[in-house]
Length: 488
Image 1 (cartoon, rainbow, N blue to C red):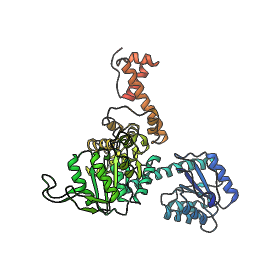
Image 2 (cartoon, rainbow, N blue to C red):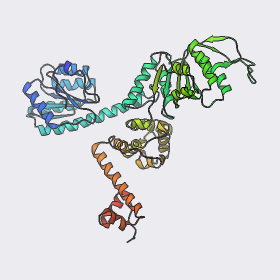
Image 3 (cartoon, helix red, strand yellow):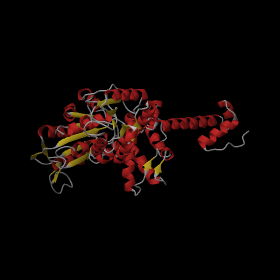
Image 4 (spheres, rainbow, N blue to C red):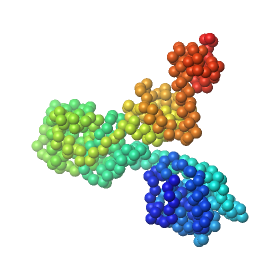
């Protein structure tokens, strides 16, 4: 646990992803006893360290709440100035989800009960028993963490449309969001790289929607699926008679996006002749329609994306070096889903909520086994594959709860993640549930492998396992829901 602090300078920040307890006690002796009891309780947070902030008055506690994030308040009932009872009420006004644990004397219990009616979480009696306080604090910490996770999920749901459906809390993903915010504040060109299905298009749209030009056009050009002749016309426009079928003047998407953004998806497939013409637009801010002689000034921001290695294409002469440098003024790499497995659960929950509403199943949700199985899969198709699986699971599920069995029938029969990634999937669950899940997964795998090795002969599988046949039969029933046949 981090060392306690008694002034704002010492507690102005907390360990990243840590858990902060605010202790409010005006009696120095009682404060020392409470600090000792808290340290003896050996509290553990799911993420980061336990940090302790100490204040002597409710007024000081309210200042601390204004200065830094706090996850749990432990306060004496009787304080100078603002009382502990009134502190509970004011904490509720600041953050109704912040648990407050009261320390009170026996003759103050009616006041503590009143405080709980006002929103306090629990109370502990003086003289404080370290065992009793530790038990209540352990419970309060877990409640606070549950509330924090639910609040984070709700914020992600609320911010989904604002951030272009970008959801995640992993460190690599937070860096992507930081770059998106920075890129949105300037008009520089942006190059987004990443595997197919990682959400490069969402990144491009998020940059546009967070920019000052969000009300201006956002034009998308797929450089991979348009023939060169048509692509040139789509980009730059054409004049009447420029080619067969050009029966009227037509502005290109760059011209139509004037003041806004052009998103060039799969820029690595842009033919070399068009690369030179695009470079001219980027350098001169002018566009000339196919077959035309006049140029038109444009104020258009360009965002490009690719799943290819453009530096390698530059070395082989398949992509212009000057265009590459002109595009990559700001570079954002979208990591594959397997490199941010801790984000899978949050993305999946958002998708279930969205798709459930779309198909008329608003109560659809993932149970813990589904979350663990989703986190353990390697997702070669990235977020696009995850969305496909979730959509099918929502449509095909007969109950509101989508289970691990539902997920297993839908994911591709590819290779699973490494053991470290599988373990990460377990850490998405509460300890007891994760422990039971590990035991169940081991039991299922072990029994299946032994039966497969001995061609479903239960007697030989049991002998190989070193346990009686009757015991092995019980394992089959428990983990595979199968009764042994009479194979001797």
